[in-house]
Each structure stands twice: as structure tokens, then as C-alpha cells.
Length: 358
Image (cartoon, rainbow, N blue to C red; front, side):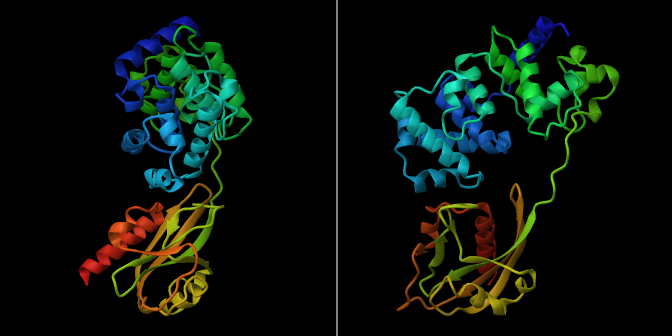
């Protein structure tokens, strides 16, 4: 490969073809950092409105560092992987307290921050500070697997170092910011997982896989094992005042610290019986339910686990009854103030549809 020509071809294409993304309109390292955290496991089109709202709500490192957990979790509602924003908040507090509000400009210092791995450190320092550092994610590994016809399994943790070395051998030291973003853009728009658009590729002449007709066979990636199946009963409980009961999830574990409708994991045979609803949530409520009705059945897929959810609606008499700690009655308007994960947003939508039909 003619490395200088490869760099030039990629940089010229990126300058002409790059998408107008809000985090690309600034070299503010905080903005770039936020965008990179949001983009983990999430599509660009999904991230854009979240990013704009987040920066509007927390325009500076200091504003985010001082933010209450309920507030920033609500801003993240629907993006999933909530540990990302918790780690980001902790890391930003570290920067404010120990780095004089300056995001570190070296990979080594960035890696000291909570939740910052090799990719994020490389992306932030290269894009914001023009540091020649590798930022190797799935897109970049796919591009380089085809460029150099590398048959290493990109799903294997040990393979990442191989690709980081290759990137450092070819990175533009004059403009590492545009080079790394160009690689990301190339993987997103041209060198896609299925049916790569090779005839439109700006670095086609440098690609060994294209020359040998192996582009559709690369990269090598082993399939993940099917995640665990978990069966959940969740109940939207409404009292005589039209209020809904929600509860805060435990501080640790999946969807930690977020809000949900009373829910419990059950055995598969209990999923379809409305008669079991009050029984299975009896340890979470102190009052009797009536008018129990099934309103939804759907699944929600996490990274390593799939929830099979059956949703119910039920009524109760609230007056004179007590609720357990971490539960609260809210109006439907007040519900909007609480961070409700996607599975329970889906259930609430079913509840509203059912209510409007009756």
C-alpha cells in the first residue's frame, strides 16, 4: 500500500462527503466526548436529538458535573446502557475537580477516567486535539480487515490490538482528526457490513479484499450466543384518583436506579395467568388489586439478555393504604419527569391505547 496516497484519498473524500453532525461543528472536547459515549451501541440518527437536548441541558462540564442523577438519567431515557451516562458523570466530575475543567489531551490521562476505554480515549484526543492515536471500533476493524485482508476474528478481544497497530502504521500525523473520522465515516457509509459499496469507495485501489474478491467474506466475526430468556410480569396499577404506581429499581444491576411499574421475574408457566398477578407482586404492594386485565405481550432485547414481558393493567383503592419505600403515586403528567426505561415506556403506551379503546 502507498500509505501517503491512501491517506490523501481518504482525507479528500472525507472533506467532500462527511455528514453534517452536530458534534462535528465544534472542537469542544466535552461535546466530542459526550457524542462518542452516546454513539456506543447506538445509531447516529438516534443519537442526534439526544445529543442536542443533552448539550442544551448541560452545556458545560461544570453544568453536567453538578447535575442531579434523576435529571441526567431522564435526559438519557430511551438510549439504554445507562451505565454509560453514570460513568460519564463520574468522569466529568473528576475532570472538573482534578483537571481544572480541561478534558485531558493524552490517551494515557483519558484512560484514567471512569468508563473511558481505548476507543473513547483515542477518539476524543485525536478528534479534539489532533493527537495521532488509534480509535478502533467495529467500523474501523471492518475497514481494515478488508483493506489488508486480515482474517482475525474481530469479535475476539485479542484482535483489537492487531487493528490498533495497523491504524497507527497508516494514520495521518498531519491530520489525525480527519483521518480517524474519515475511517469511521467510510465504515458507516461505504464499507458496510453487508453489500459494501466498493465501486464508490475512495480507497478501492488500496483494498486487498476488493482486488481479490473477498470483500463479502470479511471481516471474520463469530456470532454471539443467544442471550438468556427472562420472563417478566409488569402491572400498571391505577388508583381511584387516576394516579399510577411506579417504583425505583435497585441501585445495582440491570437498569439500576431507574423507574418501573411493579414488576417481577416469573417462571414461564405463570406468564399468561391474570390470576397470578396479585400473587406475584404481593411482596411489592400492600393493597388488593381488581379489574386485572392483560394488555400487552412483547419482548425487549438487551445485550446479553432478552425480557419476555406480559403487561397487565389493574385498579386499586389507594385511600388509607400505604406504599413501600421507593414507590410513589404519580399523575400521568408527573410520570414524564421520571426516567422510565424503554420496556416500561412500551407498556405505558399499551396502557394508554387500552384506556382510549375502553
